[in-house]
Figure 1 (tube, protein in one colour):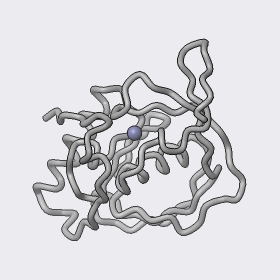
Figure 2 (cartoon, rainbow, N blue to C red):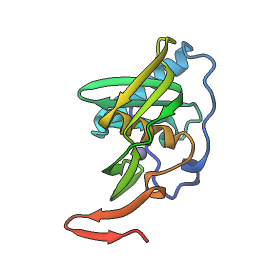
Figure 3 (tube, rainbow, N blue to C red):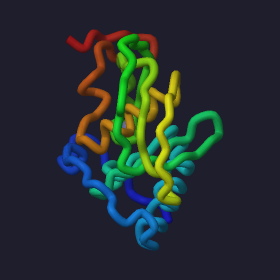
Figure 4 (tube, rainbow, N blue to C red):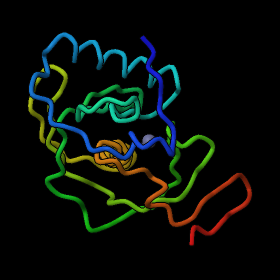
Length: 158
Ligand SMILES: [Zn+2]
């Protein structure tokens, strides 16, 4: 089932998400399937529960043709070294901008099977995970943009 994606400035996007206690609950499992389906249909590299108005700390990502579900994600470490890259968001249509983020992270999360993972992640996958994690804390990439990019034209954020 496709889910409706909320767009900025909907105040629900600014709410914080809650810990998921019953990952294997059939309703949660169905929701994860719907989240994946919606991400793929919208051609997104990631989608957070917050973006469809749900309070669970869940997000899905699609990087290098690999779809993953991250539940109750928590960063254990972020690299001092940062990289900059242009980001966009299904909840902030038609706006793109450069965002600096730590290049690599160590993250702890649960899979949709309820399995605990601790992984070091680099590059684009680390960026997407940080962007989606932010959604579940009520943060949008536009809060972190230092330069907007609109086609050929560059507009300074400040
Ligand atoms: Zn987003």
